[in-house]
Image (cartoon, rainbow, N blue to C red; front, side, top):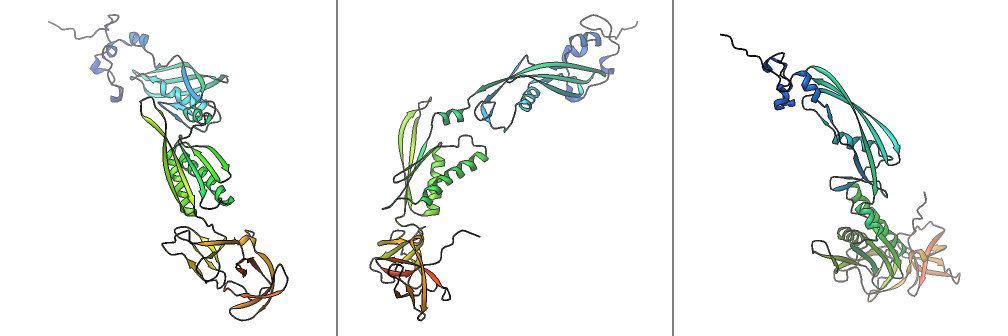
Length: 380
């Protein structure tokens, strides 16, 4: 008695050329596909598709900034055109049959119009030791819209305001300009890390300072802290309820009120109850530090005085005028020409003064005539 061990194709009934166990095995990664693996080659290839491709792919891009929507977020791609983006989208959407091995493919993009790219994709590989190839055409539609970030910018959205003011004075041009620079620098640093929620909404100068509106409370806090680090002073914050979000959570805006010290570097002040002579302010970070105009010695305010010792303003170092150095009398005194009367006058000789100079800068104020340090004009 003989037993026929041949197997037959479940689709057409023809005998299979070889027992499945004797057929060339596919790589483990290809896996088994049930009944499909038991079909004869003819029926198998009748049903076979090397590539599974969608009818169309849509790529969402922001018409303002060029960002591309991926998954559930917008991503900056810095692309001049979207051909590479379309190729990437197609490669992610296409599926290659599990039984295929040694697969290779190439794509030939065809720009139909400004918003449509037709992708001609050619695939080849080995299936059941048979070379197969297939071509599919996938249209890619570029859908232009506005991303969340650009929508917020267009709508003047902001979450915090930094108000830069100064105690008993108006912030200097340098302080105002630096506040603006700091805002843009912090935003640029955050954008460089991929934070798309970082932007400056508005900067407005006022008679008493500058207001900086930014997109997050974190940016506002960083700006305020950086200003205090550079210029001294302090800041406070206050919240204002503006609305509720879609989840019913309260949404607040935060105002950071920066108060710069009453004196700024470059000012010359006369300390009350102090007979050491006027002081040129050098720094107000932490506590006020400066230089005595009478001797050139360093001055530092006490802890209790901080950055605001009791004093009166005499002027600014930039107000100084160049005048003739007549003679050096001794280690403590020199004669200079009064820039108003042009008469020779004896004044204190600070140690920063060059005794061989022909002329020196002087400031005339209620406290008298004083030689001030030479200022760096920034040239050279």
